Length: 115
Length: 109
Image (cartoon, rainbow over all chains, first blue to last red):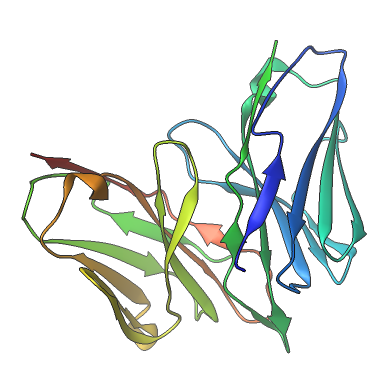
């Protein structure tokens, strides 16, 4: 089963709301990723968790707060977002082995609109 | 970090034509992937190909790691091949997969 599932698929929130995006994988992968994609642009890395520890934070504003409760789950908590944060948020997972990053598998994405 | 460039940025072809998409990268890689992004935004894995040649139906890919480029070949194009094709790469010891700017392919019936 090579599936990464993301919920919700669509989310509309106001600038004062608190919401969360969720991601789950059951491939036994030890790395999980959040990417952000604006229209007509490539995905840009936000965070990487390796072995359930935050290993990369690409200088993301603190209004985005990642969490990795266990090796299968990855959350992205959203608070006090701005309209320019509206984008497609993509979760991915991969295997890690001796410094090599295995094939990344992406979920379908969560399309976020901030009003 | 690693730089990834794709060409051409846009490609319009008649159904049945063949195409070649190119990806250049600035450093040695331990991961190179090709994706097709569908109209709903999902990134579909086409190839995991840090080196060598692979084929899957009408699609094939070749990565020449020593010369730092990869090619994606699409033969006998169909309208369902339309969309954006991304190349992404990372180097040894780095978990950051960096995407190129993509090639937007349009297949006309």
